[in-house]
Length: 465
Ligand code: AMP
Ligand code: ZN
Image 1 (tube, rainbow, N blue to C red):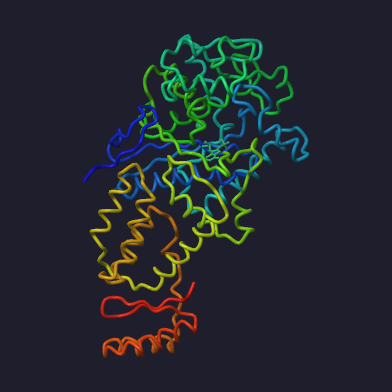
Image 2: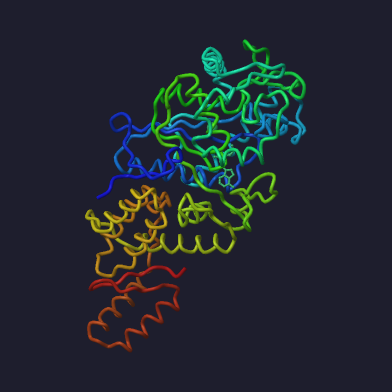
């Protein structure tokens, strides 16, 4: 069987995955900017990353997973202009511009994010790394970049000189990066080239009143946003590690700039695989702040949905395909999930699984984490009448190690003795080929709120949805 293949944005093709060292995978995922609640578009990306991580664990790897918390340096515009998003949050919430207020905002939205991912059954990283705890490492990295001749200083900051880095834009395909940069990156007059980006932002001009500032060889200020991910990924995962992930919006700017920083400082390729998930959209428009179409997980909960229904919805579309959100699609996902849960809860459990289906499931994972295919295998298994329910349950719970739909947590709903007796009478009628009586009893069982299904030589009863 084919081994795990993943689509690597850097090489623009699916490649066989092998960890750099033994069986432990180094994984870095770009975490939230904690200035507001995450929207369900953001959460789609974290669900994809969780599927990746759970798949690696399922395949027998250990995973060392680092995720940053951006609590400084992410400006409103990717062109290194505008305010820090954290400073903007202070104003929005009517707080005084002090370090204490900023820490309060960061703590509030970090906790909200952690609560969201818990509700979505996303496994937490091995280590959370807040940017503000790693300023020293970022300054050291900048010094290396300066020493190697890739940076220049202006009166408002220290900038990366992209002209000195011939591979700039490899990740995004330069032509495409140019296009995107042209559209998104307004020209800052101080920069030599529009692609050049800030490594250090001085506390002057627009950023004069920035609350979080540190001394540095380039004056008092704060780090550019891309620096934190380079510094923290290398600190915890080393100068050569396996996988780095984010959403596709990170390809042309954030990750392109990370690669430039990494290689300018160390002179070699740091990340083997770059993986990116496509957007969640509503009516063809990306879910995002500027589009004004944000939905949080809590809004879905307030509409009567359980968080895992959203996870199920995400699994139905491959991570590299755009996912179109609608309430109808979420309703269908919730119904499918409930159906699945009730089915699993009604099965007994045995120790022997269904090898043929487990192989198919593995093939789906190995084909660039094809979750729609994995779900199709799951439903084929559920519908397979030739297999004992105990074996099906064993295999479904195994699948759930990757899917994370909380199937094992479902309590078995007790079927009343009277209903069980009716189902036994029906089984006897079927054995006697008395189809009329069998149908009558089925109708009675349904009238009392249960469904009876035939299995090999027996039956299964579950509550009606
Ligand atoms: P941020 O907190 O803005 O840094 O974003 C957190 C993550 O969400 C990043 O990996 C983004 O690429 C991702 N992201 C942002 N908008 C969307 C969207 N509409 N759909 C999927 N992922 C998104
Ligand atoms: Zn990042």
